[in-house]
Length: 262
Ligand SMILES: [Mn+2]
Image 1 (cartoon, rainbow, N blue to C red):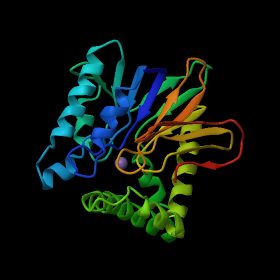
Image 2 (spheres, rainbow, N blue to C red; image 1 turned 180 degrees about the vertical axis):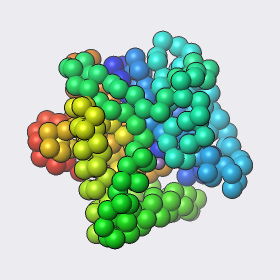
Image 3 (cartoon, protein in one colour; image 1 turned 120 degrees about the vertical axis):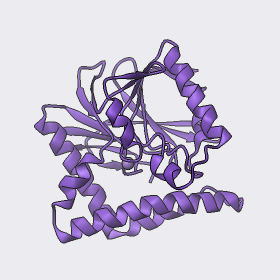
Image 4 (cartoon, rainbow, N blue to C red; image 1 turned 45 degrees about the vertical axis):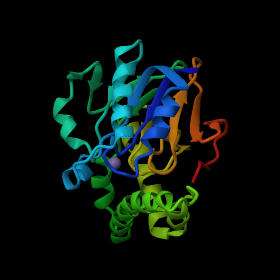
């Protein structure tokens, strides 16, 4: 059991068949943390409205999360756009899980991070140029498609190869959107006096410095199976779950852009 000061994960999409819930349950039985931030789109209420079924592995994960919250870990749940209804419960506690619209996290090394899902940035991005508006819409469609293609691939016993990621990476529109999202997140958190931002939403794990601001994205549990972890000394790592173990990639060792796990 690897213990961290803090863990961030998001975009689990429980209720959607594509969710890698069993993998996440396995992951959470091998890592622990003083504080765990669930950074939105944990439950996919959008999907559940269309098809109200909840698989056994999804229930198991929920039970596991509540068990963690009942233990020594602090669990903070920050709803996203697929579980937006839970935002009404901000300030309340559900079986030991604190619900909040956003959080401020002060790292062991003193950096102040804004923690939120990130969908709030879409409105600002859509006020941009036509290309940016198009890119944002196109990317949303691709993220939804990810979910479906992954399910199809696993059903036919295919490798969990990130086919849609490769397509996504090649699409100029997608890259335009990702860049805009990252820049908007960094600028927004800087405008509020933070040193960095930790979010999810775009299903694209990664970290980079933008005008001195630390931008961090914890990825997703539909395709990438990633989380961000803080060590006791404040160092951040991207954890990448694989069937044969967990890869750890240190973040912010240098100032260059490091697109991760794409
Ligand atoms: Mn989202």
